[in-house]
Amino acid sequence: MKYISTRGEAPAIGFLDAVLSGLAPDGGLYVPESWPSFTADEIAAFAGKPYHEVATEVLARFAGDEIAREDLAAICQEAYASFAHPATTPLKQLAPGLFLLELFHGPTLAFKDVAMQLLGRLYDHILSTRSRSLTIVCATSGDTGGAAVEAFRGRSNVKIVAMFPDGRISEVQRRFMTTVEDDNVQCLSVGGTFDDCQAILKGMFADGQFANAVDLSAVNSINWARVAAQSVYYFTAAVALGAPLREVAFAIPTGNFGDAYAGYVASKMGLPIRSLTAATNANDIVARAIEEGRYVRGQVAATSSPAMDIQVSSNFERLYFEAVGRDGVETGRAFRAFAESGVLDIPPSALAAMREIFRGRAVSEAETARTMVATLNETGEMIDPHTAVGVTAAQAMLAAGDVGAPLVVLSTAHPAKFPEAVLAACGVDAPAPRGAGDLFQRPERFDNVSADAEAVKARVRAFARAE
Image 1 (cartoon, rainbow, N blue to C red):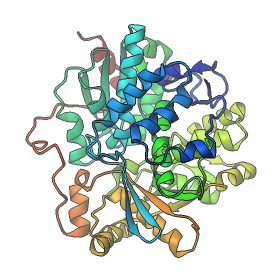
Image 2 (cartoon, rainbow, N blue to C red):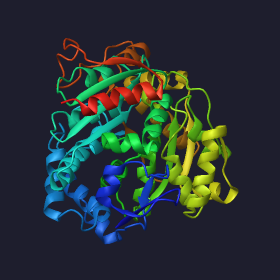
Image 3 (cartoon, rainbow, N blue to C red):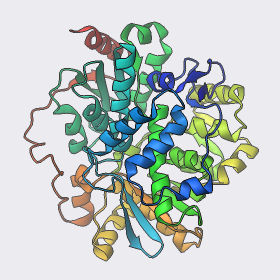
């Protein structure tokens, strides 16, 4: 299995190199050279299997012969043994035809753990066999940073720097990063937005001299292994609801578009998905792109669902690449122009291809709050604001009769991650974070830095070189 860049100007590489590289040297994102697939019988055989076994089957298609099957199986089993629920990602029925897929049973109470717990062990396997060490830099809008720090803390061949936008994530999200005491972890509070953090990270990769000097890698959703790992729970959820004999639809709260794109990956592998609804908050660049055909960068608005406060959704480039017939030259042209102008007009044929499976729905702050309290009152389920965005979009689809299949909302975080938003909307306190009872008593460690690329690079360089 080889991986190519969405911009068509980088050489094809293997799975392990794609995992370690993150961003391609031409600025593009890695995707499989061709899509692996499952037959209907193979998908049906997932029914009743433990989650880690399904993960092994799916990831083996992407890894090819680069990881021994028994090693991959051990990595998956160990990764998901860290989850509090025996099903790893359990389904819960919310209403007739409407289900929640709970993705928050990992150690940092968010869906990012599903991929990151696996990625930490995958890095260990690769680096130990190659006698290498790396510096991972992570830009986070909230949950990725905590999940990455938890997955890589204490690992001898990795140093990790987590950048987060100052004052734009919840205190619980911040403390999952900043209360970690391991010496291989550094946290930077950046005076700007998540898009500023993400732009700084991309600039680090574009600076080849810097990237080589610190052995730079990334575990944001641009990393292909993250996307591949997230595609697994689409299979387990759909099979539990009758796939492949019937289609299943999904509504996905989305910011950087990685989780929604993972559903697209599952569909390319043969999973019968009726539709994927990209549900956004007020930062609705993806919803507008799908519904209106223009991908236009705006100003980042602070909301109660901060992990989605993004106006440049990196993984949208992967979808665009597929929609233009895997034309790397066109994709590179379009996204270089977008970086300059902040506007990308999607060609009509590409937009039609996207709309074959994707829908877009933006959700207001008022709708989010109403859905949180209504869900609690009507079902007894307390949901976080990100999940509420997905539920709002799903309910709108059901009301319009625009589904025709069981509809699954990806519940991306435990409500304990956002206690202020839960209290404001529902008038009751969220439960204390599971397994983190002393989270608010632990001392924090982080440095403040301006949203200046050179200043951040200097911090990373010094940390990478420190003994």
